[in-house]
Amino acid sequence: MRKVNRRTKVVILTVFMMVILIAIYAFGMLIPDDAAGSFLHAKQPPSLAHPFGTDALGRDLLLRTFKGMSVSMTVGTAASAISAVFAVFVGVAAAAGSKRVDAFINWVIDIVMGVPHTILVILISFAMGRGLKGLLVGIAATHWCSLARLIRGEVLQLRSMQYVAVSRKLGKSGRWILAHHLLPHLGPQFFVGLVLMFPHAILHEASVSFLGFGLPPEQPAIGMILSESMRYIGAGMWWPAVLPGLTLVLIVLLIDKLGDNLRMVMDPYSAQE
Image (tube, rainbow, N blue to C red; front, side, top):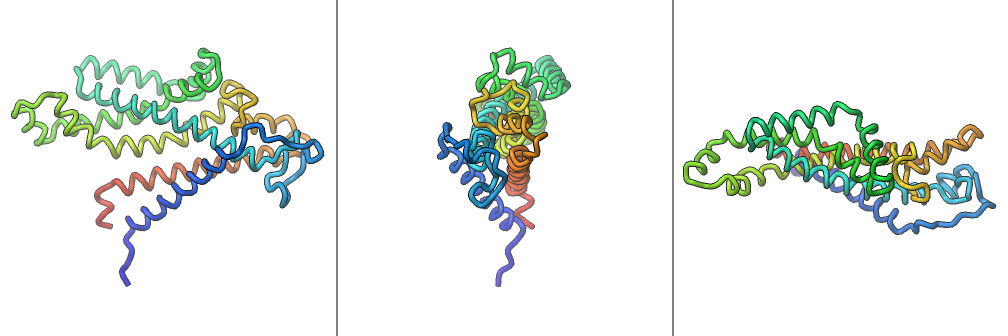
């Protein structure tokens, strides 16, 4: 019997985790935003009928949690994609531009990374009138720095390669070298960076919404569910805070592990293991 190598196992596990995340997102999207509850079933603890219990309005917390996760994943995907694309442009500009441009970009990165992300997201979201738009801009504007520095280092390394020097001697333009030599090699870094940025975006969306500076109260997001649970936790209602919060942590850890696996799969050296 042929032995399955480590790379194959990682690929299978990665596909399995992607299927789980897609299923959670699809299930959440199918749940209506205005799922009604009944005051007759309000504040019920977890049971077979309601595995996560019910909230103060009698709404099923399991359905609200999955709906909230789909909203958080939508915001996280959009913000991470915008931030990752911006990081590529900034990283390439820093590495391929003049020394002044490089110094200015590194200075901006130091400033952005010097301010805690949550505070910066809150300030940007508040300045833009809160809501979905402000939250998206705030998260996208604060999560590009690490990937931009990684892209910058990769471009600097690629520019010193022999085949790039040969292309220059053959008269190829900088735009041609960028399109044919640099950008194709940045694909793995971009994709893995995008996935690893995703859990941070979800956590910041939940934390800012929890503090009241993110999504509106009527939006069924995880942050809003946790914020509402604080009103009743002193009365012994632990399940509205613990179970949705635990679900959020588990999904974030799953996405983070997915990013690590993708980085391992895209590593050419892992093919020999």
